[in-house]
Amino acid sequence: MEKTVVTGRRPETRALLDEIVTIRKEVAEEGWTTYAAWRERLGLGRFAPSALNFAHYLALRRRDLRPLQRRLMPLGVSSLGRLESRVLASLDAVANVLAALAGTCGPRAPSERQFFRGELRLAQNAAHCFGPPHHGRIGRIMVTLATEAADNPGLIREAVAAGADTFRINCAHDSETEWLRMIEFIRAAEAEAGRRLPVLMDVGGPKVRTARILTPPDRSRLHIGDFAYLCREIEPDFTEVPFQFTCTLPQILDRVSVGDHLSIDDGQLVGSIIGASRGGFILRIGGGKLAGLKLRSEKGLNFPDTDLGLDPLTDKDRKDLDFIAAHADMVGHSFVQNADHVATLQAELARRRDDWRKLVLVGKIETPVAVANLPEIIVQAAAHQPFAVMIARGDLAVEMGFERVAEMQEEIMWICEAAHVPLIWATQVLEGLVKKGLPSRGEMTDAAMAARAECVLLNKGPNVAAAVGVLDRLLQRMGEHQVKKTPTLRALHSWQHRG
Image (cartoon, rainbow, N blue to C red; front, top):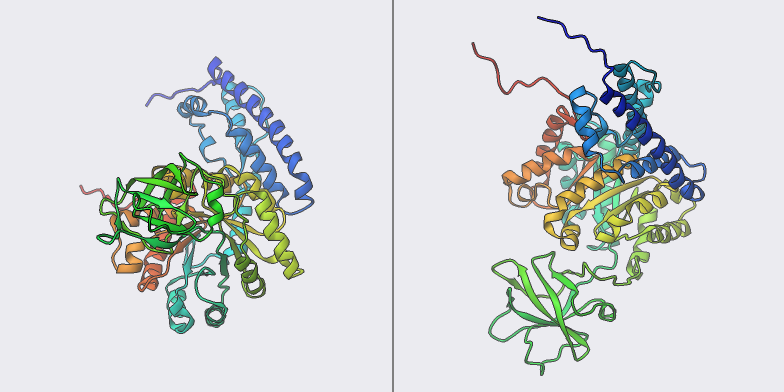
């Protein structure tokens, strides 16, 4: 076989090196400028090195790197697509190889320790939030507890035996009495298992829901093409629009306007406001379930185009925080929109315990505004206490459109990895298996993709322990093939050579 000698002195290789060196210099400068603007909030905290890498990543991703990636690939030097946790180290590594190919001097290659330092920080942060990994997998499994768990400690023990790592209590349901029993059972299971089982408690946030309902006497289902009336008070004499409903936060009617879109019951029906009348708004249902939706109270309402101006913490949330601060390991911030919302919650925690910085804060990303403000949310949160992000795909899908959820969850994952912030993949994971005992094929694929997150959330349901077992085995297998965006290239045995 003829040997090929690579001289590496091609002009295009040197041009690539110059381009990488230039990008590295610009990213370092732009990133430092962003980091400097954050310094007052960062202080001397342990998040500072992660914040600097994060600032470098934001600077780099303002550029379209696709042409550069394409030119690097034939040289076997394309690693820019996996640099989230190590931006400058990756650029230096690429430049070092290009310099060798071009036969010239380049930057010193980072050591293995330097190169994987960000990856280690992310792993440490995940362990702090969710407990150390076990069962031979990296990803953790979180289980939402149903009301029944307050009276049946066996439900928690079964989930732990199947592989559950951490538990979630949704403060939108049940009361302090049930919450306390659930936590007591978790602590007992923790002692039996000999490992930490951290507890996440969500504050409910300002969720808008339907309240009083009026439907025509001949039918109660709202269909595509129907009209409805969103109002402060039901008006039976307004017969032109027989479907009417009020909402739990009527002050939002001062913020919505003609042309705004809304969805009902997690996007099962969607429509737009086409007119105003009698102090309320007429809307037309333009899409959703072909079978329509039975209009009832307590159905969620979303207004993706509208700044509703709601307080990020309700009076109930503040009351619930008294319990959370005393009993939970993690507090979930529902409908967080910006850094000011985070600061408000942190101030509330500081009023309740001197060591509030030990509490893990989980930011639930549920709106387009939160996505746009995610860098500032991360910095404000992680600069002061352990922080994780939950991709709340239910509300996010309703707010941004179902077709954009996959794209947005990928971007959120990249952003979090760059900041070394652990991620919780949530909403309808193995939902069919949890609730009905049999998953769909698509659910299994979705769960496999969730292995790239540091934690996966299962919702409550009668078959949740079995679902934990399935997810446990799936995460183990997927972890052998891929870590975050990086294939591990384990030997494949699905196709055996047969002579």
